[in-house]
Figure 1: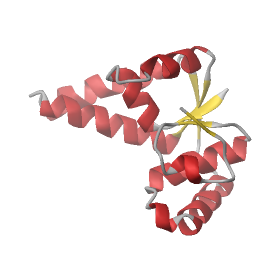
Figure 2: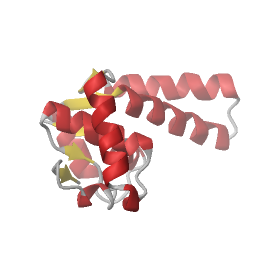
Figure 3: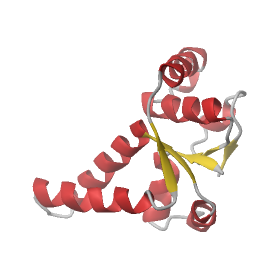
Figure 4: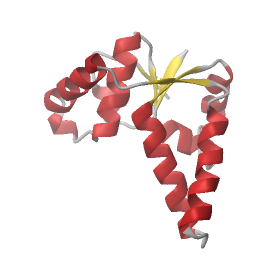
Length: 133
């Protein structure tokens, strides 16, 4: 199993190149951090707003999508250990310009001792977590 980040899940939703790998990995199950759930909810809601839906309808539709992932993924709260590891990644890999959400996903994967399913090039440059995708 793996921890999934927003990049991989958006790739799956938009059927972008490589989405089949994400689909296969999702079928095996995995984990998702609360921070990634928030980021995915935001990205989906913003996309619906861009399509012309109002804010209420956009957030409702985004919640449905995010909830559908929870059939395959187990949510992970942001423990003290995860937050501390995220700060470690943010500072150590400052040159990679990783987002806070990226660092929280890395930290979740490290804490669970699982690979991170992503696709973002910068994440693959970290040494502490195996990055798939």
